[in-house]
Length: 333
Image: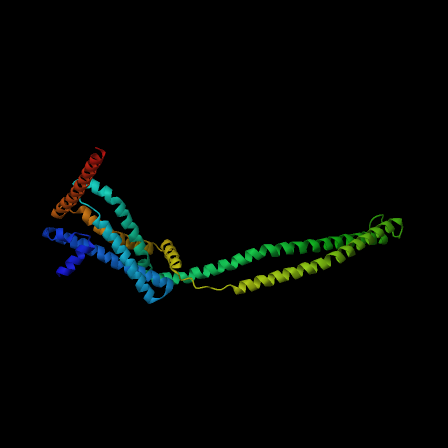
């Protein structure tokens, strides 16, 4: 039992030789050490789970989890061991504010992987939906990229076809006008093949030549553009078929799924906040306990010892300065 207590004192960053002289302070530092130790344990579990999510290897996950737990344990121990109880409480809180901020940041980092584990069932279902939406978005991106190119080629084909169609319409109209002139049902309303009919017949023949010229010029171009359109469309189909529903199961994907779940489900969002607050409280507990506790015998003895060493060092420096001065005075005299 004594060894466990001394281990927790070590976790709290306490000076054991001073603490043994202050039995009334023992429980306080035992509690602080336990809070630091179990925060490190939670950090190890969190880091191990996060690493397993990425690499799915138990041995590396355990190794990384232990390493991460030791890092967090060392940081927490450093935070509480460097805090000193002062006579003015507000100065303690001012000096402790950066440590509290660091503790809050560590709590958020530690809590995230454990949040993912708590909501694993929900995030697994949401990942399927997000994976499908990503797949559909990739298809839409391919479609969008090819639609513009296919539309440009189709527009060129339509322009060529429209030119032929316009020439055909003009020819048909002029032939109809010439025929009506010949029948006496239009134009001069005289049934004969006179000069007026010949003029209109020449116009119709000219329109026929222009139609044939446009057809001879545009049909090969239309065929070429159509082959280009077909090749591009086939390329698009091949690219769409090549898209795969890649597994989206990394830690970043799970964090995104958890964020979306929080936006969609208020209960999950509230539970998420409370989990973070729980870890923030656990991480800040050692610092807050030390801040809220009154100044005790341990703090007095620690201050005396530190003050003694400080004065001792100043005396040594002063003695060295005097010796140096005497030497310089001796050699200069």
